[in-house]
Amino acid sequence: MRVLLVSVNRFAEPYPVYPLGLDHVAHAARQKHQVRIIDLLGHEDNSLLTQTIQDFAPEVIGLSLRNIDNTDSSDSMEFISNLKQVVKDIKKCSRATLVLGGAGFTLFPRIILQEVGADLGVVGEGERFPDLLEAIERGADLNQIPGVVSRDDSKTDPPPPFKGSCGRIIPEKHRAEYYLNRGGMLNLQTKRGCPFKCFYCTYPHIEGSRIRRFDPDEIARQALGLQGAGARYLFISDSVFNSDHSHARQVALAFKQAGLGIPWGAFFAPIAPPDGFYETLADCGCTHVEFGTDTLSQRMLKSYKKAFTVQNALAAHRDAVDAGLFVAHYFMLGGPGENKESVEETLDAVDKIDKSVFFFFCGIRIYPNTRLYSMALEEGAISSTDDLLLPVFYQAKDISPDEIMDMVKERSSGRANWVIGAGGQQTQRILKRMYQRGRTGPLWEMLIR
Ligand code: B12
Image 1: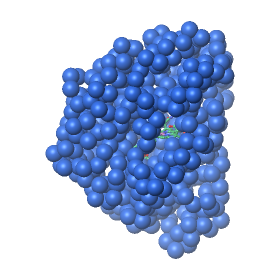
Image 2 (image 1 turned 30 degrees about the horizontal axis):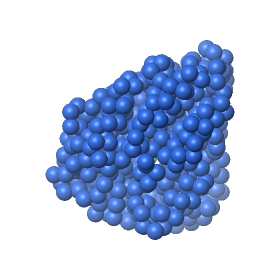
Image 3 (image 1 turned 180 degrees about the horizontal axis):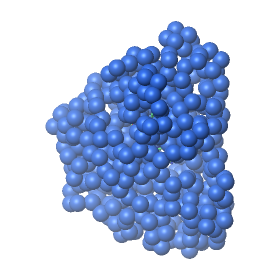
């Protein structure tokens, strides 16, 4: 069959993120089908899409929905209207079967299918897409395929995790170019699944909670391939890179052994690392460590069900900084139990942390299939009929988001390494200019003091 895969994401903050997932789906589908991919990032209208449909006449069109919104309560944006318009424009020129997939889609499958009027969806990992294509070709019962949803069926849970390997994914040159000219970053995965139980988080629902590790040598070959394709920086897009320290270390060593020459970074949990962990990573080319710290109040860490203590977080920070790595901490204030004292406690601790950038977000987005969802329901903050597609942020009872942000702003007293949200329009303009001048990577290290 002729299959067109489309990345519908047009959001480029904090920087343009290469649509890696779609390459995985294409890799799986290419064994038996003719596949083309287009990426709408950087295109203001859908003319590339409609032109490609006219030339290629696809029988199935797969749309990848990564982002539903920007999850920033201080400057909220939604992206479902963009998807709606894409579907509308496709329907004007094609009768292809429309299939949705992607991390964003997986969070609200039925609601999104209904909202935008697509035919089918694949919840969770897209490596099952070929099973769906085969069933469409044979006219078989589509509802029998794990993870496939249609507008009128009620099953929405992701299927059991896919067990295959990640395959060798090298982006097509003309599609990679957009990203290479704007920061030079490409991405790869070293494992799937998140074993942590943070009470607000969607990752275990999207990827499963059991870790599935890819072979370090295979990943290193993949990394070399991306370097060969022109990447000047690699972001490891695992939910949490150090959820298995031993595997993370093996991956880093495999990069070094393979002769990878470009810097790389990842998300980390500030859990207690084994001795020498961050030194090894630095020695193998890692440059950026992004800690999902959330809070430095011990009581709030407990409330969020984080897997570390304040002491662990400070020790992980020290180890990473001593290893010569650039370190950022992401905070998510305003969850259940937050009050003036716990915010003070976090800010006191932040004040004592050196050589880092701090990103402060306030209010936690409520997603279905999380413990925060059940809590918000019990507290009457949401009702079971709210679809939550437009973001709803949990509000702490004892302190308002404005009060929290005022406290952060007052304490930061203009320090450039204390950033509210993702930094707003001004940060985006500066980043854009830097990328135009050929700078590479996430660049938040320039704010470190
Ligand atoms: C890594 C990551 C980042 C990194 C990306 C770095 C990089 N250079 O790659 C950074 C920090 C930059 C980032 C930023 C943002 N992110 Co982010 N990110 C992730 C994360 C952890 C992994 C994404 C990933 O690459 N996965 C690996 C690839 C291989 O998987 P995949 O793309 O999901 O594709 C698979 C399936 O989804 C499916 N699939 C994909 N497309 C299709 C299409 C079809 C047709 C089919 C059948 C299947 C299918 O098959 C693929 C293979 O199995 C996810 C959470 C998660 N665990 O998924 C959040 C996530 C995608 N991000 C999210 C958000 C909101 C954002 C931001 C908007 C803001 C923010 N607060 O961080 C920005 C937007 C960036 C942008 N410009 O688009 C949300 C999106 C949901 C929502 N509310 O909109 C997620 C789901 C986290 C969450 N809150 O639940 N992110």
